Amino acid sequence: MGKPLPLRVRVFITTAISSLIPLILAMSILHFSFINSFEQQIATQALDIATLAAQREDVKAGYFSETPALHLQSIAEEIRQNTHAAFIVFIDRDGKRHSHPNATLIGLPFTGGDEGLALQGQSYTSKAIGISGPSIRAFAPIFNGSQQIGAVAVGYFEPGISLTLSKIYKIFYLVIPISFLLILFFSILLANNIKNLIFGMEPIEIATLLKERDCMLQSVKEGIIAIDQNCKVTVVNQAAQNLFPLGTKFIGRHISELIPDSQLPLVLNTQQPLADEQLLINGNIVLTNRHALVIKKKVMGAIATFRPLTEVSHIAEELTGVRKIVEALRARTHEFLNKLHVISGLIQLEAYDEAKSYISTITLKEQSLVSFLIVNIHCSAVVGLLTGKASEAQEKQINLVIDTKSRLLALPEYFDEHALIVVLGNLIENAFDAVADQTNRLVQVLIKQSPQDICLEVQDSGTGIPIEYRQRVFEAGFTSKEHGQGFGLPNCKNRIDVAGGMITFDTTDHGSIFRVIIPYNLP
Image 1: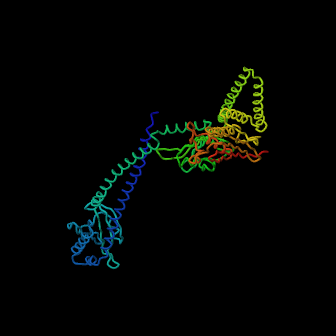
Image 2 (image 1 turned 180 degrees about the horizontal axis):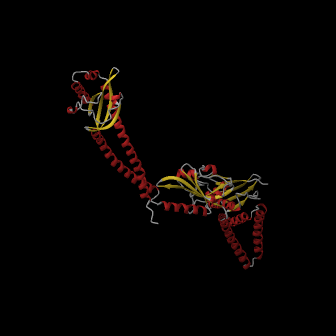
Image 3 (image 1 turned 90 degrees about the horizontal axis):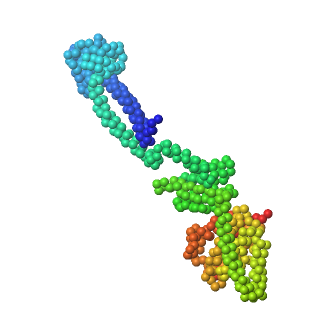
């Protein structure tokens, strides 16, 4: 099998043929219809002239004059000149001519053989060949009272008709080539436009891409949903369908009907992508990215990808929490090394009583903190984080106070220990940074649980948040720190929003306090 013709050529040929065939048919039908109509019009006109001539009184009187031929010939020439007919012939009951454009034929029998019905009293039209050639003629009987005295024949020669038609044909001959050229031009234009619309690709290439797209959409583990300019769903893969109840209809539905909190309409309007945000879909926490679909600087729709927080995302959160704990424990390890150095020095100096007193003091302090946390905080990862942060605070000469009212028994399903570590760790780190340059370095932490919710409070004794920064603290990428990245508080807020909670802050010149409320109902 040979290589198929390019799409542009096929579109051109198809368009040209589909346009030329109707044009040829229309011209043919118009041609024959026009000829028939024109001849019918000539015949009707001839019959009207014959009828009017047969009714003239001077014509009737001419038949009874002493020289009928002379009288009727004069009338016939008058009518012929006024109507531009080819001939006006008056005949008697025997079929002999009393008038004719050729005077030598007067008195001779009428030729053509189609005059018989006229001599029997009928009016009609016909086509026949006479002495002067083929013609369209009309006959009308002439009556004097109730007695027929003759008939009149009015005719137009076909060569004359053909001459008139040829003038009209010249217009057709001009229109047809122009029409043909226009068809060719617009066929080429259409073929090129179609080719441009499909980015110069051939149908087989488009079909291959569609197959590849379907395979890729169904093979990726991430859910994918695309919408058009009207926010109607156009594409959805199996991974995205798995997030919804079985039998849910997607194609053609407004995205807000499926995902009320979807930001795809916002992305469609602003053309600004939204990356790595958590979203709750039918009880499933997913990480979503949203991008506008722009073709030739025109927004055609938007697409969102959903990555369920499965093993990979769960590990990522664990790693985030582990990093917080590791950083805290590093400070704790450094603190213990310093304390061991102190003990080792006292022993070397043989100051045994001082060494015992020092060991007793730090042991009591450590036991007091650890015991309090273990009894009141039933989350090992959070205990490890707070223990490490206490050591880090001591190393940085910060007074970290964990409120004695702190109590945490269990966490809600949508806000596990990894999310809590991310939120609490970021808030404490920000508080440490806020008091780093202060003389009074105080940071207070409260974790309080009630039957309705969990409340986190982190307060510092810094100088507060500047007024110009207060509206942007939760904005991704915004930071007032010299080496900050601006993702700490936005990351916290995203996890809090997914859990249905809220984060607020109060700030003055004497410090700031951040409050987090996570709704939770204890059994």
